View (tube, rainbow, N blue to C red):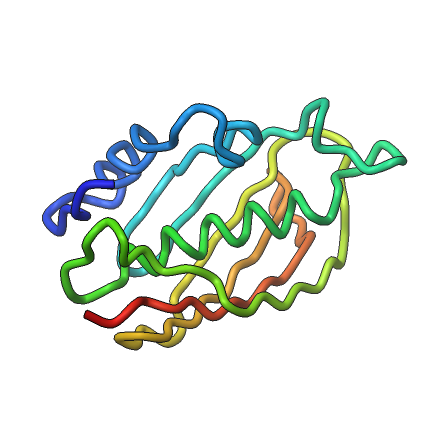
Length: 148
């Protein structure tokens, strides 16, 4: 990944990041799309479709957590105050999730905010909702940024 540009609007940064979702990645397989990406918040969407269901026709909890983790990683990237090289992308080292609802159709929406923008550890809080705004999951994560 190229260095993250600092002079883009949240919508422009979303386009820039979407262009870097490689084929065959989990984000690509789940058809994630970043709608907004700025230092205040990141919003990512993924359609509910075949391939995301558990044994029953409800979204697998792992899909919601993966969506939240991806949104939180992009949020830490957008909120980071310095320059990051390609090998310094924040990686999750702790993820805590509470699944409080589920859905069978529509779109999953993850909204992530960075609650602690540290230099080597960053903490993000993410809400996963359906496309009607109904809460499905709360996910908190800690991300490690490799120091230079």
